[in-house]
Image 1 (cartoon, rainbow, N blue to C red):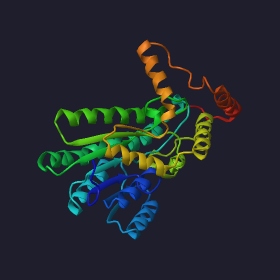
Image 2 (cartoon, rainbow, N blue to C red):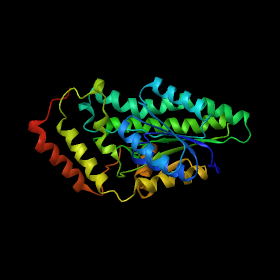
Image 3 (cartoon, helix red, strand yellow):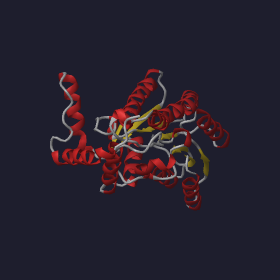
Image 4 (spheres, rainbow, N blue to C red):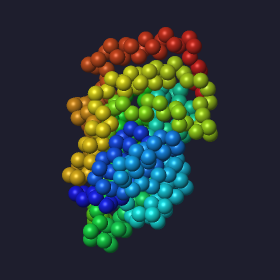
Length: 309
């Protein structure tokens, strides 16, 4: 996709992080913007900034875990602007801890946003985009689904999150093949960032009441949150840089987008484990002090840990 001016970009999770940076670049490229976020205040701030910069914006509070919300966003987008050209299924949340300590509420919340949010985005927007590609020779479209490095490797203490993000990678690969199968002039990319300073470390702020924690966080969940928080603060790559790389991938029809390509050795090791039929490689083989630190944190908190629920 080479032309952006005058075209339409739909961005979920647009109030902060990658979503806001993607919206800023889209605005710089003179696109019309559809911004969705579950946080009204963050969304209003993004809308005000981008309208102030001269962009044409439709902003709607949207819970992507709800099919009706996303369908309403799609319907309003089409009525206001027409068929979108870029779809960023970007909204996401994170939760960690030992897998067996994850409650049904944890699973429902994380999969609802990270997995079902992408499913709802594809179902609501892609049919009209494919139809436009078939009937309008001037149309070109592209879908970007935000996954994670946790979608191509399997770090400990991140089982629920990893499951959701692996599913996003699989869906996006299938989407790419499906577009080719029907000769749709559509592109797809999957964004796999590592630790980048965004608001995902504070995801609990947006957990709905219906999937509130059934019990206080366990020792492993507290350890995972501390690990993620420390890594996010120490991240050297910015959300703006990741957004720029994403637009570059769209322009050059590149499928995989990695914020930290230097970490692909870990992906290669995992693939080799699978092909060889071996057991998963130790993710801490080169940094045993990290594993030892996590074990120590779990052990020191074990006395006060909440039993699995």
